[in-house]
Length: 380
Ligand SMILES: N[C@@H](CCC(=O)N[C@@H](CS)C(=O)NCC(=O)O)C(=O)O
Image (cartoon, rainbow, N blue to C red):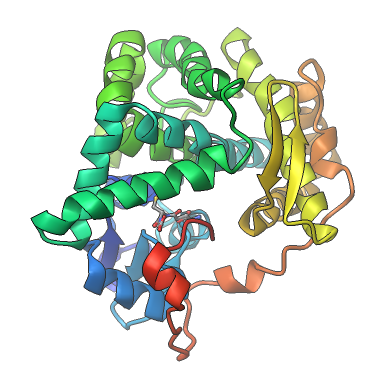
């Protein structure tokens, strides 16, 4: 355990990131908040090649430690850093609340990805601006446009039109952002962070989509500014959060009350059923499945291996709780649909856990596949 940054033999860390990347925003905000010494390297052809060679994933963010080992995937990274930098924890001591923080982080990470794709890639102003921006990270100006065009098309196909989104349900996917405002606005009017006085894993999970996508992309940023000013303020607050500026004692607040109702219901009736159906499809070797939830039907959506792992981790976390804490979480969800979908079909193992044991000390260098080289790597 390393509390004092001067004692951390793995510091300074080098963060490979892009300033328009969902998960880069999440981890960078965390490193800034915890005063973890780090430098940054922007995404480009060379840096992405270095990342894929060392992590096996052609994705940002990735972190290189001072002894050339690597960290990948923001969820295990947060937990790994929490062990080394235990001051000002982002996971509450109360085990039930800790579980809720992890559940909210995961919901923010994974369930808000689809509307983030809609808002970035469907409105033309966003598609053109972000396509060019991303294209320019990889190539000089002449090629930036065609690369950006291609990337936008790939994202639309991968995450929307070939993944269960149709002309009939796309307005509801778009409106997922507004459903979050209904939760965030009244909450953040009364408290600085989602679970109380200090940033928690829940804040960093929500920050991914809200900072680098919704709060950044031309069309959605204006929607955030006009319809969700408290959320807009929270984005800057979290980006510039420092323990020194906050009260010494952390005051966590249990997530109940009417602001929370809609969100708890979405988790119980949409997100957890999605995770369960995805894991079931994985166990049956099905590449696609029909998601049927309370709000959406996504026909023929892709089975995502990584999200089997997400569910497995949440199940393990829940099973670690003592009965009293499990009951507290169950009581919280009782009026909103229950946590049944978290437990249905028991634990379905993803087999991915070993990939996320950090740091990745293996000397193996991964070879980039031709497909990764041409198409990038949309899914984990
Ligand atoms: N689960 C990973 C997700 C990382 C991820 O999806 N990164 C995206 C950018 S936000 C990426 O690099 N995508 C590469 C591509 O789409 O080709 C994490 O938490 O770090």
